[in-house]
Length: 113
Image (tube, rainbow, N blue to C red; front, side, top):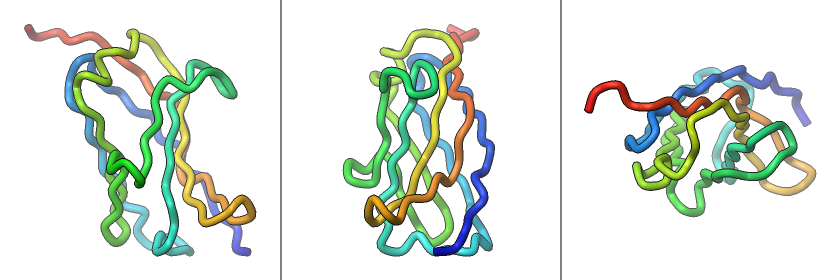
């Protein structure tokens, strides 16, 4: 199996806003074809799962080399203001797992009312 590089990606989301981010993996040495994608936000590394994005429920969408993650405002509103940790994996089996990106996931408050 080929070796991949995990991209460091920090995310800032505004509490109570609709959330959507797109990422282009471009000329990556692998394809997303046939892969399932999943991302989790946790309170600390290896901590409690606060939210999960995945291709099964449509909160992660794949179009060619573009990965889009999204979340309704009602869900983001449930997360307390703070800095958490997240990563995203692509997999076909327990033997074929790749962490695509990881970093901090920060929830901030709105400024404009």
